[in-house]
Amino acid sequence: MASKANVTFNVLLLSVAIIVGNVIRLKVIPINNEVKRYLGYHEDSYLNFTEISAKYGYISEEHTVTTEDGYMLTIFRMRKRSCRQFKRPPVILMHGLLQSADVWLDAGPNAGLAYLIADECHDLWVGNQRGNYYGRRHARLDPDRDPKFWKFCVDEIGHYDIPATIDYVLKNTGEKKLNYVGFSQGAGTFLIMCSERPGYCDKANILIGLAPAARQTHTRSVPFRALTEGISKLEGVLFSTGFHELFYKGAIEQEFFSFLCKFRATSEALCNAIIAAIDAFHPGSVGNETLRVLYGHFPAGTSTHNMARYGQSMQSRKFQKFDYGKERNLEIYGAEQPASYNLTAVTVPVVVLYGRNDRLVDTRDVFWLVKRLPNVLEASEVADPLWNHLDGTYSQFNKRLIFPQLNQYLLQYSEV
Ligand SMILES: *[C@@H]1O[C@H](CO)[C@@H](O)[C@H](O)[C@H]1NC(C)=O
Ligand SMILES: *[C@@H]1O[C@H](CO)[C@@H](O)[C@H](O)[C@H]1NC(C)=O
Ligand SMILES: *[C@@H]1O[C@H](CO)[C@@H](O)[C@H](O)[C@H]1NC(C)=O
Image 1 (spheres, protein in one colour):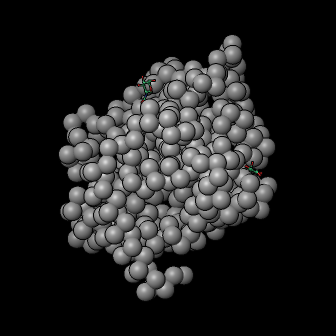
Image 2: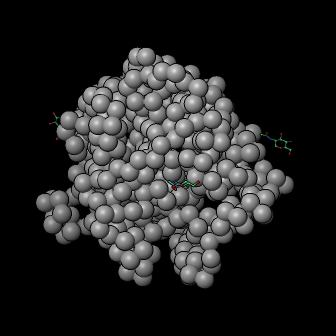
């Protein structure tokens, strides 16, 4: 545990970093793709999802999902060009906190899970959640002018974005059910949906949760704890001074990482060290090319409110809704305490894969979750003792360590 003085120092440092980052943003013209090409950035670090997947022989369609509360999310249907027939039903693949659909391409063909799933001729739909750069549109609100746009956290993503995405994919394909693969927040928000939206859980044949983020009592990452707890304490101040959106693409910290990591010489040591600092060290797991690419898409942005929600979950032993304090809770929820999510309502068959070296979603919290889910088919540790959190998206060993099991379950619930 970090000491009090240490936490205070981190909070201070964080506030300064956020303020400086946001002030500088006003003065910096975003570096455009032409300039990046000229400076020798890896192409995959600045192209978009459709362009990258096309480059490697996949066809991606862009679709817009509009949620009941007006958020407009770009999602991608990605299929391998050489497949003659596609398996049914469709598969949804959903990213985690501060990521976007691009995260599934960052490890490159042969390791990125979007490529691997599409290679098996599944009808793949890659989702995006509100607040990242593919989910930064709204029917009525302007994310740059209306702070209201940013009043969301995983509670709303689970309530609106995941169901809307599922409905859209089912409607578009004419299917009754689909298969769902979620990483971290992408799995946690599915659980929230099952609890809050009766009937939706039954629209999936299976939930494959990679390091699913539910309760986070035992998160070991000191920087992530300090960061989210700091934001949680300062949320009111941050919001009222205009910091509604954090760690977005084009922000100073993202451009800075992206720039440093474009160099072959620095990428391996330095950019691996950034992952190791947030998560855990796993030498050689994230390939050199991936290190040069991933910071072009990470961090992908979210709301201050969502980061604050993570800060709360660090301090709680429950998987519960946002805690606004007794008075506001009474107004909003009709109770002094926020309700816990109902995990008994997660009736869908669940498969959980987790890493022993994961410092963001700790194995103790995974076991806590698994014990409460009524229909777990399998919960297993990835066969590599150093498997950390972000490996689920970035590791070059995905094909060997994650994909066979994942695909076996997809096939079990698919037909040609
Ligand atoms: C991706 O880039 C292409 C241009 O190459 C553009 O037409 C398309 O709208 C972009 N898609 C997204 C989601 O930004
Ligand atoms: C990355 O590249 C260096 C040389 O540039 C090489 O020694 C190292 O093995 C590579 N690492 C991986 C994981 O491929
Ligand atoms: C939780 O969900 C289950 C299954 O849908 C339901 O039977 C139960 O009443 C719910 N519990 C609460 C406290 O809402």
